Length: 461
Length: 112
Image (cartoon, rainbow over all chains, first blue to last red; front, top):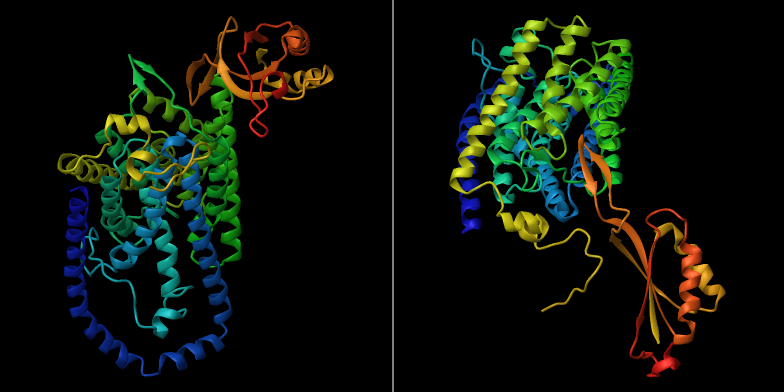
């Protein structure tokens, strides 16, 4: 029965895609005809001519840099997978890794099917810039799409770079709901979130929508990626409730992560990947800007780590490793909106504040019984908002008012989407595993597998 | 035959093994265990929340010896494992009915 329900949900979403696909197909011939008239030269000749032109060198280097960045952002998904595994109990490891394998694969596919064109639509003249239809991403190779006429990179580079970002939103949710979420429900939610919701708020800014028209500034996605994921995660945790045994008789009982080495590896991988996340968001290989972004990104991460180390040592009595790891991520999320506009000194300040903020935020959410095993809501949601505001506070790229409106709009959209969709899933098919399964671990309950089957025997029936 | 069962501090295992080798003990089985006695637990902190760890990690050493060697064996363990601080562990001496060596079917003292 469970399988049937899942299939039905998938079918429904795919028929929505088909519907949109037909609309797109009707419009295509007109556009193609116009292109053909304007561009009588064949792609091969036009492309070869461009590659012989003086601009080809910068274009090629920029394009290569964005592809390297896309690969770095891909590595962040390994980072997310290891952080989440390390900060959870060993009995849920297979489940966590499975979710992460699903999210990156689903994210790339749905971004090709719908998300890319929904996010970068070129809103119609006079439209409100709020919603655009998506469709299959591919185009015919043309000089306009594959040379500097398009950008400092090709259409394909544009797609793959942005596709790597898209799945991040769902990965953030995955960490917050870990160790108790029902796998099938999570997979449906993550798909809807990445396929439909993420491109909507993304298009408001990066697609030239209403936020970008009002002067909002979010360089690489403190709000559009991290804040979005963080607030969707908050909504899901509210719908889902805390892990069994976390809050008993008004006391917080820590549920220990099973591998600090894994968590640390994950954070270092995320730190590495962030050079692509922010560095690639320059959208070309401009030597000044890319190097500035590398510096601000690293300074903020370091500031975040030191900020959280000091805070946890002073207020929690001990220098907490997992808090320091969250601090690095907090600094990185904090600088993401202004990595190219906040100058190095202020990048350190941004990181330090984010590092302090994340510790208090984690403790605050624990106090109000929002159970977030990895601190995703604090790292991505709270520091996402802070980072967006930091652009107004520590640089002159944007005003405080529009930064506040922008980050709250994106956060609110993700939050409401999460409440409604995850709430509906809860009513229709349930979003939580049974108490028995939670106690035994989701590895056995959902997958019938163990992550560490060292002791015991394997016998075929 | 006697089973000498010692629960010791993990970092003392090497010294205990050496001491037993010195008195001619040729084999033993060790297990990682957890437990508490008078030492009780200690407090740890994870992400801002304090919690008490009651069960502390120890190592259990098990050796089966001839009746005549039991005291010598336990003395060696006690001497090697002692730090004088609380939590050093305990030694139990338990009678054993017999022993069988699986490879050769030898039994009794021959099997030790």
